[in-house]
Length: 290
Ligand SMILES: [Fe+2]
Ligand SMILES: [Fe+2]
Figure 1 (spheres, rainbow, N blue to C red):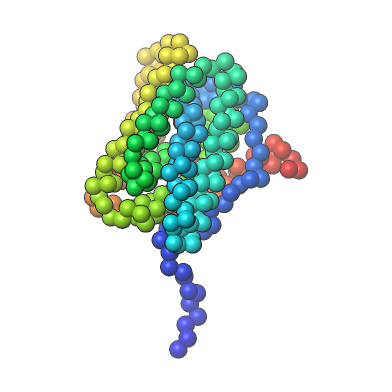
Figure 2 (cartoon, rainbow, N blue to C red):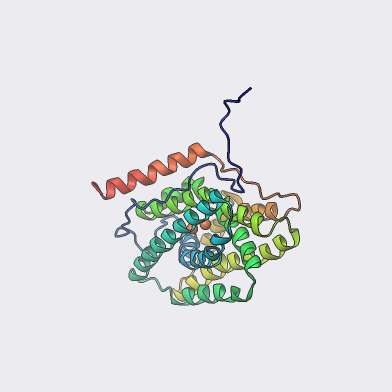
């Protein structure tokens, strides 16, 4: 008897939708001041470090993954990879615009740029297989950071709206393509636990540089004096509520667990739809008729 069930094509991709590229969005940061998170100087530096690092990381991801596309003999996974890299290229472009705007507001960024450049250059001695592992672990950590950001209303609402638009957009897309680098790891590297561990440690060092060392550079370069009250409040933010850094460490341990199978679900899709509507609406209102 013939079955009416729709045939699902077999694929190495875990993404059951087409990854969108939002070329319709427009960007304006003219209302963003040097402190785009009003409630905390250190949270401001934390997310500024992430923004400064974005173009370096995205370019690194593109440099590693673009040449692998002709070797992907799986149409859906090849499509996912192309779309993910197109998203990353847009992130890089928009963060560059945002970072230049922040520099024009008088925030000194040169020492941080130098540190970030050096950290990504340091990866040039690794093999392609190792770098695919570094990308997979790096994307896993970025995915976790994105989920924490999208669920932390206190930080989101304390951001200047134009800055919030950028971080909402970027975090949304990180959740959409979160599975792709896992798929690529499974496709090119397979089950090798040793490679996963080794490359995850390299990625952790990279993320540490981005989130901790860059933040310190920013504080030093701008000659800021941080009070104990500010340090305590940031400690609470990082470790207690919402526990941004604690949650990142938790997700990293999940990735390092020998039983972690690199399987991926895309989380709360209804929440992501709401974020998408918010991002679209903001852009439409800021640039009517475009
Ligand atoms: Fe990105
Ligand atoms: Fe990404």
